[in-house]
Length: 413
Image 1: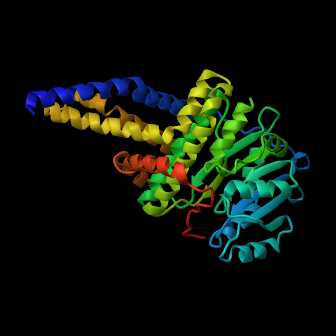
Image 2 (image 1 turned 30 degrees about the vertical axis):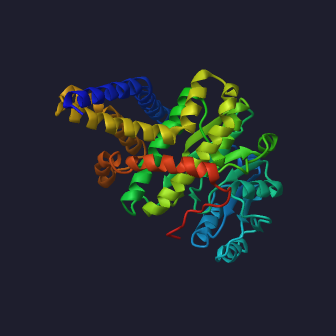
Image 3 (image 1 turned 180 degrees about the horizontal axis):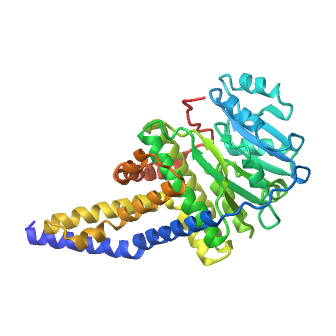
């Protein structure tokens, strides 16, 4: 093929890429930059609502789904026992789903010291977190349900801060999740930065713009009567938190976000475990998209509808953005042999926006460690590039995955 013809083909492809980037990718990144700044504003102006006196606090049932969590379960239950919440208004259900390690033994040791902690062996389990939560819901005595993962260590005031924001229009409240092992290695630092940014834009930013957040898989409370009205957790969903969030908002209700209600959790310390976890999450998004895309019209307000659609497709949008930015840069360089400062700036927009967002998350999270700030510029060219493969694997997994436990292995007690 003559060089001129090859160059013309490359230029034509480049134009198509630019049109796509200008119409889709760049506006999305501008939108997330907006969420970043509104998130900073939300957090800086957030005021903790008054916490009711102990005798006016609601009875809360904390549900902790667990499977083979012997390494962490003792510390988690002790963290629940140390919550600054009246124990005569608190019930903790450790929902063991057929563990084959010493989870039950360790949990029962702690429960023997604290009468408000109850260890439950889930019958007919092995069908995933949603099944276990629905099983626990039938046993729960509380008027409010709280959910924590088996590796969580909420700060003593977290539960009080969460329940203080419940009302008729706000049947669910979520708090902030921090990474307890973020100093372990480069991967845990990347995960820490990712989580800080997600919560800044996806929780604080949305709360500021739309008055609602999204439920994570842990550190949230929800009124039991409302949960029963919407049918509990969808046992077919692998991303049960996102799926439930969609139904809460579709009911015309809001999910409040309290950035001062903090829990600490352990994150994967190996790339293989992290990749497997994220593929499962991406597959869960595939299911949620397939289930709820036709119900977007039930969401109040066009802005929130578009935002939820972006949330459902975030794994794939990020992957597409990475591919478009990479291909455009290479194509332009191969075509013209050099990059001017202006074209370089345009091509670098995705990277620069990404970097600004990560820095904002570090600033908001008060991370002073120099290692994170120095690693942030490399995060896009390493950590984020892998999302392309995660998205493709998630599409495949979403077609065939069985709804069973996909437990992240623990590495510390």
